[in-house]
Length: 554
DNA sequence: GCCGTTTTCGGCCCGACTGTTTTCAGTCG
Image (tube, rainbow, N blue to C red; front, side):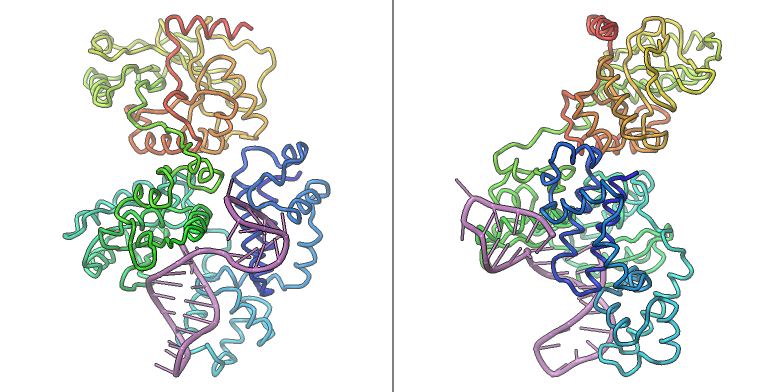
């Protein structure tokens, strides 16, 4: 069964092989196509059926043809041929840090080495010594890299999910901001773009004295090893295993550096080619005409100097956002303050008055106007376990905040689970597994459906199933829940939901299980999906509830 | 191999760091 992920993987492998063969621009062309393909929200086969493969950025005549071949046969003859040409062990060598295609090729051609094991033997036998470009340090570096690779099985250090990296990033940035002389510090890179996973963490700080910043940073308890350190840049590896690149620039270059380190690579390459067409140069220090710096202090300045409006980080993937911005079209993405209704928080039946009040205080602090509460722990027969009268009273004293009762239903695992207090005003539906049950009546006593929750890739998140539920949610007038973790929609799936016209339900960060970090990540996902404040789900109450019910009957 | 309100051919972002080099190549992001 062909898949987008496999197609991207094949093109990436082709790029590696071409690298070793010394090709100059083809490898990047194949990598660009691979990046585009893996961020598609749709199966390649469907795009191919519409004859629109060429509309994918980086896909031209040759790659279109190979995609067609792959979809028809599951194979790419060109790839098979390259694999016969280059020993597989040589490609493994490319994975070693500090070792690139040129060096791998030299090992292969000059030493006749065909993989890591043979390379280790060659080094042990002293066959590298005396060769141009291989001094004692370089040899030691290669040997160390080989040892590390042997200790850590291939495929171990993948890209960790953003929710894992988030608290680490916050800690590191806070530590940097506390260094005297540091005006600003921000995490950039794919982290700032709100991607689901983070490769390396890129952090940027301003200071006139980088040395002091590096000294402090190197000594942080999170840091295991300093990999390299120069005058403007330091790379460390955390105990956690994550690599962090820290860059320190002067305040006048902060915007340019932030723009540069936020990426994406494709976005930056595109931006710089526009700059060159205008006789300008963009680098991490600013936008220049000759030696004159036109911009650099803020990102707005940098985009402005190129004749563009500010483009939010979450959109910077070179997926048409630059062309749209050039025409003045930049969507107004949803902001944290736009999330005024939280349709899905939980409260245990054993909650104390203090806990209930704390929840309400957080909601008021966030200036929410609506909070939908599920009382969890209700028994399976549907007999709600009652909150104490004192808690009930506390929940009624909203003070500008409307509190709603919610019934949450989990379907797909027998028996179905229902939880929520009596007098619920709408339902949250959680489909657990399997396809959309055709004609299956979801109970709920005729209550409108507010949210379809927990649809994520962790639970049989096949595109067809996801699309089915999203369409169903849309027909109900319900929102679909977005957030980090395998059970919620990531940004790619959220984009699918947006394209289907479904609204998105975002956590406010007030709930016990959905803290501020979850809320921030979910917001990033929604923004990556291009959502604005009008795309947020609202509680189906009053007249809108009647609308939702009538839609459901149709 | 891709791409084009200056092009269907001739370009392809730009700089830091390291190690090995007396001026640069390779790697990385």
